[in-house]
Image (cartoon, rainbow, N blue to C red; front, side, top):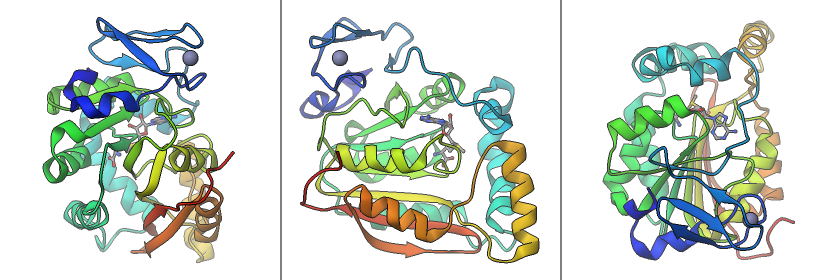
Length: 271
Ligand SMILES: C[S@@+](CC[C@H](N)C(=O)[O-])C[C@H]1O[C@@H](n2cnc3c(N)ncnc32)[C@H](O)[C@@H]1O
Ligand SMILES: [Zn+2]
């Protein structure tokens, strides 16, 4: 529930439909502007009651209670190997931890783990920043059930990355690990991140880059088609970040992956 956050951060939430302010009524959140109520009866606020994940085998696995318990121990690594050419394990969980810790060291304010999944890296953020400063968001009920069991002190909400339930400029940092490739409109997701970050706010992310080796690209394409995911030309990510008002601070490309850190500029917000 939202009470798991420090009180000073609870006002960051806004109606994902009209961006109006929210008031709490019991477990629910109510928007005075458009009249919608977002239920908290499941033990977390559902900010996307009518939204379902895009179709496809990858999205199916992210929502399948039989698979989600296998995601962190097994399929995540296998996915990194195939999509990210991570056969030599250039990227390991502890390398990811170190990257997040370094990128978010100076972060102030409320920190969002966007598409937090079952929470392995959300825990890293909580350990570094403190539990009352971190909020996890995911669209999959199965993932949310798992992360709530693993991290009962974490504030988790159900929502979509395309319409974040936060006011303009209300977040100090956003992390999005291993998810942009699965989200329906990554360019729009970056714009949402840019909208919600305050000036100087930090964005860290890890996703996959398009292989420039034709044989491997063929292999990657088959995986993309099968699981409804994508790998990005790095130049596209850089362009989309700039369009979202996010200035690139660091970009690394271990094997076929891309890790980057960007910072919200002080200039105007994206429309
Ligand atoms: C591959 S998992 C990544 C989980 C975690 N961040 C990690 O690094 O392991 C991708 C996550 O994106 C979530 N997801 C898919 N579509 C989403 C959307 N539109 N909005 C928010 N989360 C979404 C899935 O439920 C899943 O938990
Ligand atoms: Zn509203």
